[in-house]
Length: 572
Image 1 (cartoon, one colour):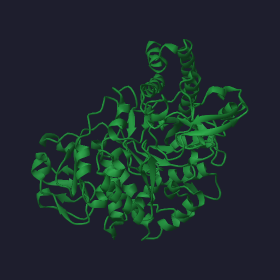
Image 2 (cartoon, helix red, strand yellow):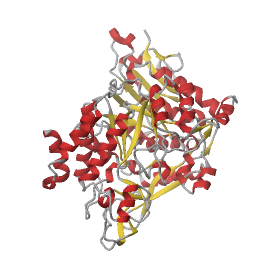
Image 3 (cartoon, one colour):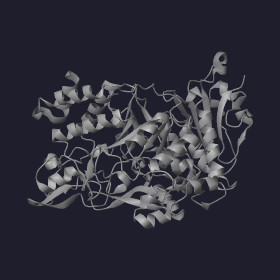
Image 4 (cartoon, one colour):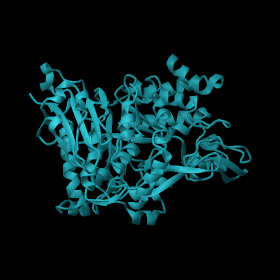
């Protein structure tokens, strides 16, 4: 009780409603009955990211079709499924939520979610910053009565908003015609996504209730969407404010009253140091999205040069106890570049954006306070983004792509695999034309029969990638060095290679335990030899076994093929 009140005071200060903590505690007690218990995270944890309608069949509702596909092809290979917003929505493919408590009837219902949860742990999105114009809450605001009457941030459009950090180029303040006349409300992401007013404690209490509802309905992982923007103070940049961090701490505290092995994840597409601020002192997010990784890896493979990737990975700070990274290299959104604004020079980001255009993709922009714009994200399927390098397309697309996925699976943390990486999905230009949204290029909906037909064709992208990816997942879960908390060390062995040690360097007495592993990645389309092997632990300078190929390897004499990856353990 005392810790809860302290957190609430960090949010509301002296204006704290004395009944708010009692209301939250009561909701927690009501949620505790019959609550599931989870195991601590381990190398068994791999999360698949998917929309509820990413795999379709004529005979079933989308959630049922997705479940059958996952159970048939990925049972025992992925532990959890992140079902992207599956609620009734009005725009942004689910992130403009109309009703937080319902399943979109076009996808299925809560029974379908429960059945999926019988085979996989689940991740849900808590879309906190905003809700749909079509929500009942906003309808209350327009009508001037009801629960949502004071749930939104009213603003004077004549004031100066130039300091506000913007992830979009759309107007920040939008007009709303209400029964009381014209009003103006805050809309960080679009005029259909109206920002909620967390300065009103009733809004916080409503989201605690939604949060607990999701946990009760099978979510082990909760992703806090766009959480960095939830608190507004005019005259500031309105991002990462102290009250925002306090709200994240509060939600973690609520979660841990139920089960300390549930996981809170923040989604903050911002420069790296700002992103990891959501670990707090080990009392905020359990995991943060590793937003710097996708653009750094794409840049490295596009140029055949891992200088920035290696420098960044070597400088990653020690994590607070109980915290870790959610690693991903592709997602339902594009490849954000904000996280590397202070890592990769602007002209090289522009060069990468040009390659994305050449490979059929798009570049989304963000507005700056001075009226200028910068690239915000690259909209392209990762498989197509890796069809070549800055010199153009080549024959190495599959090997280059699988190199990216092996690197994802090797890093400290828990990997999140986008379903369209697993299925080697190409750019969906027709969906972009249909929706008018560039992000749709990477949100293909597979007809299951079509996918399985391609899978049966020996030289299709799906046949070349899908089974090899499944084999990778089966192998990875047998390697203790890939435990999320296993130590990580990065070696600088030249710009053509990325070299990563997981676990402690083995001693002769315990080599056979395979508790340590050395991963070596050729980032280029040319054979490469590791010339700086002398800095590696002695055990890896001797003969090793490559777990990926079952080859015997002595690094001093070995030449890696284009985009080859080694997972090395000492050979006794």
